[in-house]
Amino acid sequence: MAKRFENKGPTQRQQRVAELIRHAVSEVLSRGLIQDDALAKYVITIPEVRMSPDLKLATIYTMPLGGEGEDEVVKALNRHKKFLRHEVAQRVNLKFAPDLRFMRDDTFDEFARIDALLRSEDVQRDLKKPDQDQGDEDE
Image (cartoon, rainbow, N blue to C red):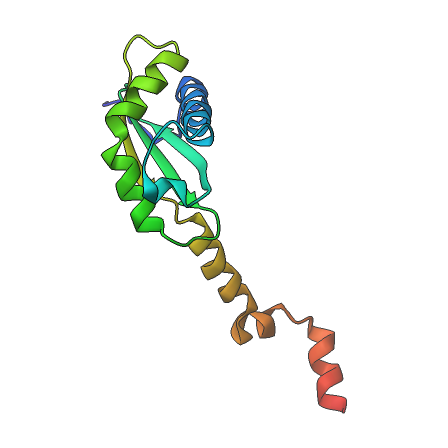
């Protein structure tokens, strides 16, 4: 019988390396080592980094504080990814410096969507306790 592979989450090593890279990129950005007007006018957050299983690709999720200029920031970071890769290699002790890919962090959009669903009339009606429904009918 063939061995069945399950899609597991990231390994502990992937998570550890991702966190080291997140800190390294954050440090470079906070020190203002990249001279780019698109980056200088925003405070940029990096909430998450995901590593490929072979640790050769780091997908860095980023968003400017306040959410304005997201596309401009992602494009600017991707323009400077060669410099950032070099800086990460100096700060993180790995056999190979991973390629960096910057993407817009959409977790806030997902949170807002879920929040809107939970506040919808249909969900609120379903969450009412049965005795509350009876109380409404008596009035």
